[in-house]
Image 1 (cartoon, rainbow, N blue to C red):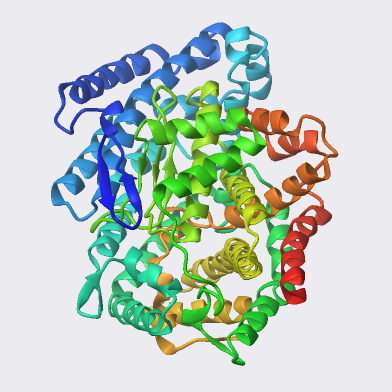
Image 2 (cartoon, rainbow, N blue to C red):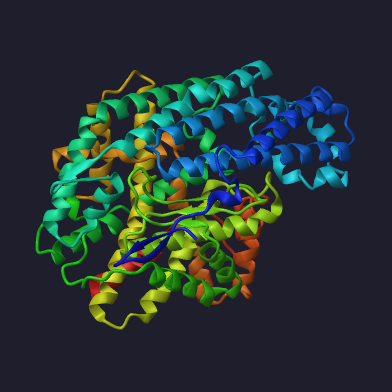
Length: 594
């Protein structure tokens, strides 16, 4: 077992990727890639141009083979991604990752025709094929593939876009990742990573918070022209492809891939924006009062409360808190979560070059997910662990649907993670008897929810402004900074004071680069979970934990309306979003009354 020792934090695990492959130069990896290449070419020879004439069961067999080939290449690609995430400044890992992207893209070019040809089938022809058992099994996947039918281009253009992706969007994304990983932020004679510097923004010492903020602002500002070039290039690339595919607005592809209607997303954003005053504006005014000032400096936004006693969690305490909370809700859920700790599926220490932040990578259904966190012992790190473990449990449970149907739309993918956070928070709050600690915990939860709901919707609004304005021409870094400041002031309110360097803080957000318009999924998930948790606590739904786990096991086979129906919830109704936001309002009410 690979571990990292830290006297204050306990024994921090480092993941073991050998469950995927033993090494980048392993014979097994090369054999799999060769087998996938041969299978993909044979698949092309057997099925290209023939789907319309295939009987239903034969189509089902073809989809199963397509799924099998995908399982091989995604396993290899997952290994490369995780190895690279462990140290993005290692040139050899970078070359390996790029080489794997190019090789996997070349292999998958042979199977690219398959979904394109499926989308050329007439509705009645496909309906007839779906009467056969083997094809019917894949009906949810076929439904989701055909959502993109109106936006599909010719086979030649689709192949060109597919093959050029390694020298286009993915190359610019890699440039962003490696640039961020190499940046160092000077502070007190040390050179910190972005994760370490951002961590100090919630340090107990106000001087440390300010120094970290100023260092972040200076270094990010110095590199803003490069990040602006990346942003402009990717936004233009998206605009060109959106135009060819006839997407009406920049968000359309994301909403379609999330299987959520434009009007549902618009309702969410509108509801959250309309509550800025009741949420962030009110809370930060209250926090400024606790600090004895009229306005908080932006580096104090996530500062510990003045009377919040220091507390550091060891890794073992964090693990026990999360698994204990999961177990109170469902022993089955805790049992799945425990496997991540017992089997080296988590990478926890902060290391130079390691990917900042946190994520859960599902890999492939024949293996298991991996979690990456940067654990520094704060209560927020415990919540992050609960969040990512929720993703991991979801990915394990949905794995039974197979590679093509295990994936969940981003909006629902955040449900299990945020629900895991809520369970952990409520469990820890119930065990806390000290009034000051309870107040600090409640305030911390409100801040996390504001970061998830208000801040992510503001990010979405920022992206919208950037992509809309980019269509008129390239934006200099200064202009992007102005748009950033506009949404920050609007969303966070008058109780926050921003210095000039804060205009460059947009540069470190990876979602803007990797997944444009992804960010609203966090707010969607948080509000959804607040509503879901309210139903759970009310006791109105019998066997709630069992129904909840069934929802996770469904993976991507159902849409949000079908998944929420057993709980009496409908995201298409405006009161649904208000119900979720009222949970946050209620927490702030409670804090005001303390």
